[in-house]
Image (cartoon, rainbow over all chains, first blue to last red; front, side, top):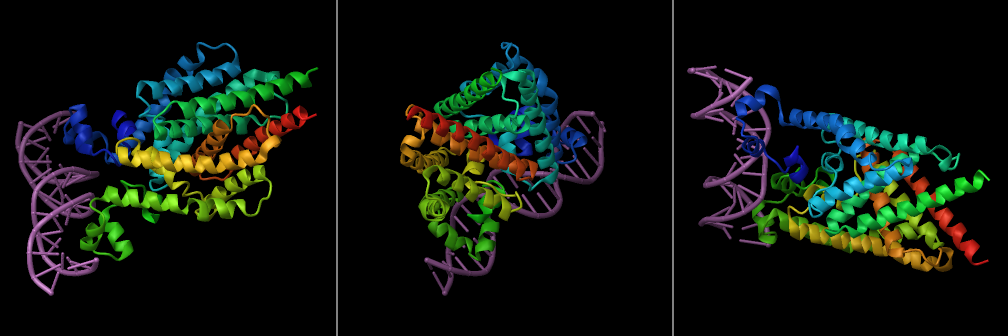
Length: 187
Length: 187
DNA sequence: GTCTATATATTGATAGAC
DNA sequence: GTCTATCAATATATAGAC
């Protein structure tokens, strides 16, 4: 998991994985027929950890559902902080590295993005009348994911938190306008 | 260029590059000391082609500067269409695949992102009073880039144009609100 | 299930004739 | 500058004893 995150799938060899894990190839290939199967297992682990490790800790400090969306952004910002802008989202990395060269992998990545977007969608639903009635919440949830992923990309490329922070600022401005619009509506 | 775009940097070997280009290794290594040097040369080519191949054709059909921003999004949408959602932005791919494992590459990618963002920034400047006076145009230009990159990522992962189109729709809604706000201001 | 040893292909890169 | 031949290292994966 850590090696794929740090170096990408093609950037790490099985030998390095074995050394890091202090495992032998006989054991490894007993459990995983191929390197790709290990990646699939890693993705299953990400799916398993999404709520307990990402959403729940990120959502905990915020009561307001819209604030939770921004707490989530802050959670990913913290990944940048902790790695000095060297690492972002492992799922996004793999999505662009693997593309559809490995179709099994692409399908799992799509599911992970769906699960992530669904978490944001839940916040938007909980926000209820705070948002205008005609907002496409599925599109908006995907949009939050897209801004997060794009923001991490630019932050890593520029080796700076600034583009990520600026993007979150613009997203905040957009939400502020949506909320103001909804408040107007309800009058 | 094509191979790196389709398979990523680590996903292509020099042998495949030589075969595709019908070149021999002696010639290749005469011009490029290492494979990384070829990648650097490819990035220089992207820099060279950015205006003539991307911005100018994308901007041509639109007179209004804000419309040009969305023509640019349409240009990238067309990459998805032409490749059946298999390919997106080669620069974004490399940004997430390489990260800062190869620092020389990361610096060039940052420059390319800067140049792209500057193109959007120019549109925003030309839009003048159409946008609210207090808009941070640098942040907004980066935001457009971020939405574009994130949108391509999700479209490729889902193998569907829908997430990209939805993201452009949300971005459009945001611009509409900014434009409406500016129109209000000027009254 | 885990171990050591190794197979086989491919990796990026080089040598040296022409 | 380009060619063929090839190097040394690494890639993923396997064999077979324990």
